[in-house]
Image 1 (cartoon, rainbow, N blue to C red):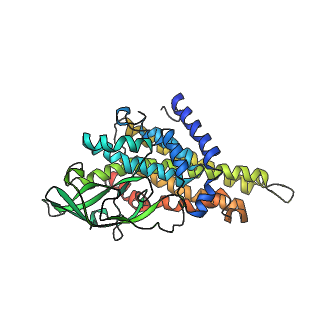
Image 2: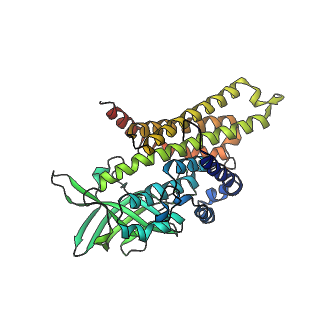
Image 3: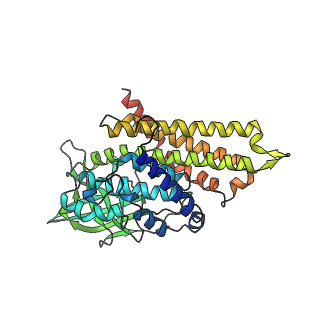
Length: 383
């Protein structure tokens, strides 16, 4: 990647996914959204395309691409639908990536080929009902009993955690006191179907209605000691590094939504007439759309920059926070403006912008709230 120019390979991937989103997802996703149903067939096809394995090496069952390739795909999917995009984002960056980064050779061999093929989905259980941004306030516990971890606690808002093809959830749990007196937090892999592990019924959500989000409970849930992921006591630190990357992916998804709002508004402004001419000929509408395009373009530059720094092995924490913060906020603005341009039709669920409006708000909350991003940026500036 140089500046905004995609390599031939990435451009080809982008076009393929753009066509898939337009031809396969767009015609049917509204129905899944209305029924709050998980689109298994679409997910299966995405698996066959290799999308779940994009940033992983071929010897782990992946496609040998990189994180930027994943971001390009997320942007194209979210231009049409965010439920499908977040299913992919969470499966890759929260489900499979921790195992790729921190797993033992045995854990990688057991899980990664199936996660990369999309045959099974992974999830990450970090957030708890009583502590969202304050992940250090983890109450879920895991104690060693012989050669097993015994896990007790509850997790909230966990994506991909209760589908028919969910294979595992990696959970953060307090495994004892650390030497400095704070909590020792570790990550542990819990396979679906383990006795004592329950994924409750799906939440009723404002948006992302064709994606799977649940509360999880663990009641004397036993898994082998070998299911510890990474170093004992490093669970929190590991996850913070996973979140830094994930912010770039969420930024890409937000840019896709913002661009989708622009696409839909251009189309509508050309077709819809009022007072004898297309509404797009009115400067009030034309300027709104111009501003939407400007915001999406600028946000895209922001996540491209963060991804570029990350892939070159340079510090990127501040740039990832900037990209996530800016992209999510302009996604909300573009969704609001697109709904306004559509008038009464923008309030009807059959129009994509109504879904985009409902899907946009969570982008300012999930994987680190806007307030958390501002804290991170200020800290990186030495404040």
